[in-house]
Length: 312
Length: 281
Image (cartoon, rainbow over all chains, first blue to last red):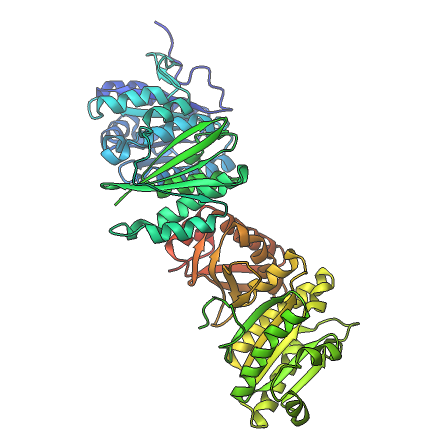
């Protein structure tokens, strides 16, 4: 029998991101308990944020050792929409980083079972890039019996590691974050004939035009539309002398497109990367994406077009 | 409360109005000052025009009805900036305000309805950055005083001054006329707190930062910045406020922002300003 190595070659200096798919109680215990005990034996903070079933199993198995976990929390109450959830998570990570050289986390994003929680896969994808230098092991639990096939498919495409039975191994289906995002964003159809189009050289012109155009049942979203579009324009006008703003509504969806003739986006994942001090323009994209209900990007060396989708 | 206004004409002004006005040349100067002072004449106010050359000021007033009678009766006074501000000491904002306060009282005592000042402040803005800081403090105090005294003020600046100089000055006035430039926002003091109003975006952030830091940095302790009338703030504006919090923190001033509207709060949160800085709604 091969000896078990719960974190494989991971040496605690960078990010390891594993998807563990389980069905039975025994599978859960066989994976988590050695993982947690290894962390405790190494003196690392061990955090567990999971659903009720996993918490119950772990509490029974670990007994008194549960108290040695740095966090043992319910995942059910964590979901506040993708951006807010990640922003809160990001703050926790930075706090941990200032307190410990390395740590490990068992996380069960139970909200992936909800219709509105599925966007979380995009954040999982981008985490591989933006947390690459964060010194922790994230063991993500996914219940095969609760999650739909489409979500499980996204899970394996967004986690570079999976479990072989005795050590973590590379996931064959793993995709680069940009490629994953492109595959899940809304289809890029031609603008409808009734769209309003403006050529903009200063963002305030678009604020005026949009504030006047966003009417008839969309008033409650007007502030979001204006601010999100403004941020996209601010970025566009950093790289191009003017930008085009197109605006249309399609039944229950309002769409704004900002297109420029700049050199293309260096990083299409920015809308999913939490604010940090070292970025120019990154916060604007994060904010725009978080204000909108969905977003898609068409970027090439001859220009960038970004669409934001708002629902009533 | 005075709302932020972009003025096309220096008229329709009353006590409490504090106007920033750029002029291109002598005739442009005259075109602003004449209707402004004439309105004060109609309202029975004491009129005061200040600038750098008495002859030029009187020339500029040539078209003012009853100019000579008003000069003779003392209702209209023309004063040189050098008589008001000792060039060696520079502007001392608090003293200047006290002197205006007594002039308002004196005008009321003489039966006038108030004091109406038109001041060409260009020479003060042309001095170095230390003096410009004092000028910013002065404009803040003038705004505060206009809110409570029978005072109407038109601050005139030569439009050929650098934009870096003019824009923080414009921000310190709720009424603005800055060439073709659209009025977006202002920093004023019409209630218990300093208040940021209108729209603060990338294009205005630097000017607001300069004005805000200059007018608050001299008094250690807490400064409350009311954001209730801030209708739009973008990420660049929020970054500027985060910078202001940091710069002021270094000199012992704790800038606390209150009453932000929801979209404004969204931008502040990106810089962790909402939590630690006690945003309330």
